[in-house]
Length: 312
Image (cartoon, rainbow, N blue to C red):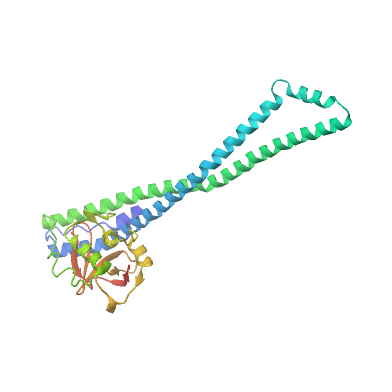
């Protein structure tokens, strides 16, 4: 499936007799990046899932430790008991013990031996119960470890596809520009447009300070960011935790209307929610758009808006 996705992202070579203009190249790259960015965001979602699974594995290992100790202790007790009863002709001594005395004494002695036998059986039952509990806990852990291995392999394959496609995009861009400077000014308006105070305004200021830094997929600072990584880091700077994935961010925060937007709110794009930017007022957002373009401001409406959200 990754191979198919990679093939679908291949860029059409420029016509030999007419090199594309920078604007044409940017438009072409934007189109291709809209196909690639969902893969990047899916990669981020997979990383979140992987971290949760690893946490579960650590929790299960914590549960296993006392169970293993219990089995070991019980086995040691059984071994000591068996050694005491059987080693050195102990059975012969038990027979001698039972053969002496009257019938009442013999009955009492039989009761004592029965108690010893029941104790032995109880200890054996303890071992079996502990082992059963241990195996019950280990079974989902073994399944989880196998799942983690599969996810890690998928992550490695996905990373190769992403890196390959990013390299193609940057190569085409550099051919047109001979630099990575991009088009237009990075900060064409005040950022943020207003400062009402509070955590939202501080988060917006954080995003504004990142203007000019590079886009790197899967990154959340301090020197490089992807789209969801930028807004995650901005809100993290004021103590609000967000997941590193645009769709997950959308599901975690409350919705706001366009009329109620204020600096610090998040603007989500496209039907599959594969892009997010931070609103900074005046109809502008700050966003990490794609490789080859630094973090910059852009008009909020220069994209297919899905919805708006407010982390706090």
